[in-house]
Image 1 (cartoon, rainbow, N blue to C red):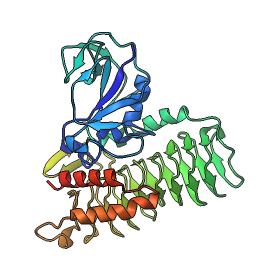
Image 2 (image 1 turned 90 degrees about the horizontal axis):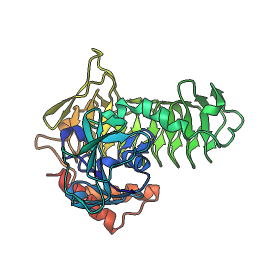
Image 3 (image 1 turned 45 degrees about the vertical axis):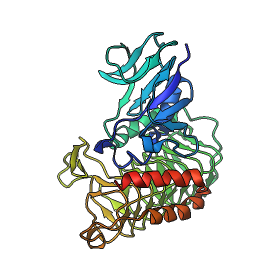
Length: 394
């Protein structure tokens, strides 16, 4: 029996900052694939719809299926949790109602033909599946290296030959280049894992790539050491990068270390922006989000930076910094560990009342930035940006 696939986002929670409310959680990147893409591989079919927060209905982004508020679903259907990263293919699924479990955690639900799913049920028959349960945005960093290693092994082979002047440390079979442009002097180190460059990637001389590493279509790598990262499409990256997830369409075009971080879409990191990813005590890192304390259990964690956020030149981000959607970080070399959505400046620049980017300002910035990556700001995109702004400004 073939099941239609739906994805269910979690209820709003500080653990999903800074992306909750700005995009469906299913559209975050877990390794070389989005969470949604991993569910689609698991189920063997494209997602029919994503159930997310009501204001995200009609979410506009290339490749994203219809986004709706949650509603009853006729069977046969599989409803997967966006907080779970499945591994492999789905086992045979029962004809009657069922739930998917991973190590005691329910991660999905299903109904058969003639039935309707109207919400999670704990009493349905359990089917054990393999994968990773995510407890918050920070877990995208925790499992990155392992997920990348598995993703990239399947993408090796049939790559283009490397041009003269490029150097490979380790087995050359660990490099797959698909219609990418490479200058002489690029170093590929595959001794710890494979490296895959997708179509249209450009790599400048003086760049050292260390696997496991995946770089999405049309991204430019402009120099420096880059290791153990998943860099989405249409990014610009220069300087030292380690264990980072870039959703795509982001700029880090200047020097400055960024490590163990998750970078949203349309982020711009000013020249010399640096993240700390390790406490002086070498102890576990705690996030602070709008007054909530979140224990991550990680000893390496840099910054979680929401969509459309910007940092000024020379910004130094402390361990476990969270920057909300649309925030503009300027006015302090060392900003606080939590910067709320739409913040306009920090420290004295923000003022006692807490300056906020206006809706008109938010839209104008987006209308200047998106066309730089050949993305038009049409009426649907503008409407969605307005809804995201209104939600973030609550």
